[in-house]
Image (cartoon, rainbow, N blue to C red; front, side, top):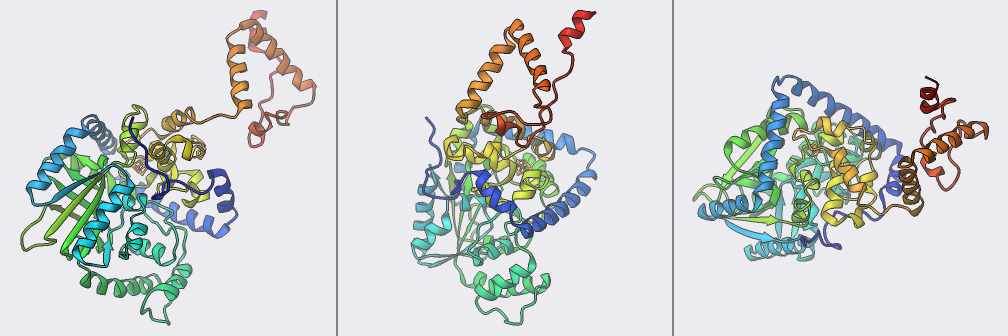
Length: 469
Ligand code: SF4
């Protein structure tokens, strides 16, 4: 059987179920203001540039088809990546789970003699808890993406795939910098340009003096073994080109077969994520080029539960995800709770379907319910992942309360027996007389109607209306 991501390492499991964590988040009005403003801004920007594309729907269909093809022949494509990267002077490592990936990266960094690494923003290294693993080996990881740096200095957790510090406003960022950024000017203001300049000054020296970088990857092109990282700030380009050693950790699903396929995703991703026509920085490299860029390149291919996801023919579409975060920005649940409530590095609708599959449903059983099933995520997803379908599929696998299971079994039996069904309808109508109109169901079903209106039973059933005619 395929293994799931191991407990006790990485960040895929929360300390408490979603409803409890969400309740805390909902009590924070500042958080809701920050989230509401940020998601509305990104939505508007993204919607405008998507509207410019007459073939957006065809691009989405192409992206979806390419990903389905990749998953159908993943082993073959991964072996192709390995052989091309190796031929170009890189070294490929296979990591079954987070523990193994952390060990591989830590040993590689230790072998260089460096006690510090610079990092490109990467979801997968957060997933496996790489920073903690490096720190426990005496190696300091420095996040170089501005939002990741804010999260790291604030000893915080990311709450959005694309904008990890979306829950912070500029006054909070100023406080974090004043408290934790080495050498910061005490007269720092909360002007965005001033804050960015302070981060730039701090990071520049680190870029120039650190010999090892760790990155994730947005894509790997199987036909050439080329890796691609897209970003907006240029910090990624610095990390990918300045150090002597580059270590890239990549989830196995990030492969695309050919450069032509990459063209589709490089159009979909920026418009759906940052609302840009193209990513400001698209860095690509193939192995090692003598005299240019890092002279040692290691690629760590990570499973960490992905084989288990792949084994589920419905669930596997979660592996199509290109981490654009469009589904977060349109989700009414995410917009109110923020990312921390999901407990995993993958928040929002994609987190609600990916995290439970990576960990095994028992460890994240509340997440498939963190949705109103409104379908906005499906409409927004640039690779057409049917997230509502996945949510229902996963809900089916969660353990159900005994009362709910009994009620559903009784309903199924009743609907299967016409005479009993007619009697039940008459009984429901009598509830009008019993005065339950406008009120909820009695216990133990009262939870169902605590947040839903109970439809009023009609005065006449369809069967009665029909038989009169
Ligand atoms: S599920 Fe779709 S919309 Fe959500 S982050 Fe992934 S690619 Fe983007």
